[in-house]
Amino acid sequence: QVQLVESGGGLVQAGGSLRLSCAASGSIFSINTMAWYRQAPGKRELVAIITSGGSPNYADSVKGRFTISRDNAKNTVYLQMNSLKPEDTAVYYCNTQVWVPGGSAGNYWGQGTQVTVSS
View 1: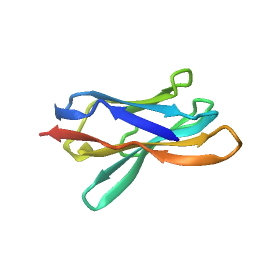
View 2: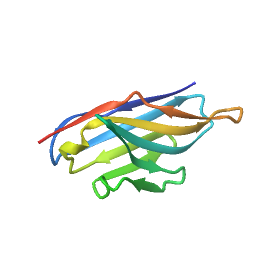
View 3: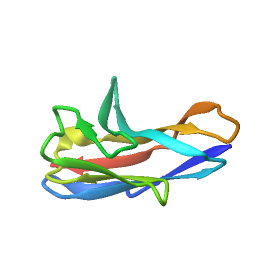
View 4: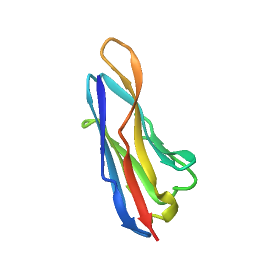
């Protein structure tokens, strides 16, 4: 069993910042990619993804404003969100690819955290 626990969402004014965290726990051998998605009404988007080696990629809509990072010792991925815009409002989900002891791999999701940006 692998669990992902997210934290850090909330309400912020446009131009403000938030930092999301997602910690993985449980029966983990290693973690491959870690990513953040967001779900707004009628739209789901991959926001950012980071490889096990630390190489990030971003959606065009957040480039230059968001930064994804990870702490492999803590099995945690972060999303630093700056210069937030009302269109960033969504439920944010973390997603990881995890290898568990025994050699099998699985794709796991966090519970989601609401980010609301007011204008």
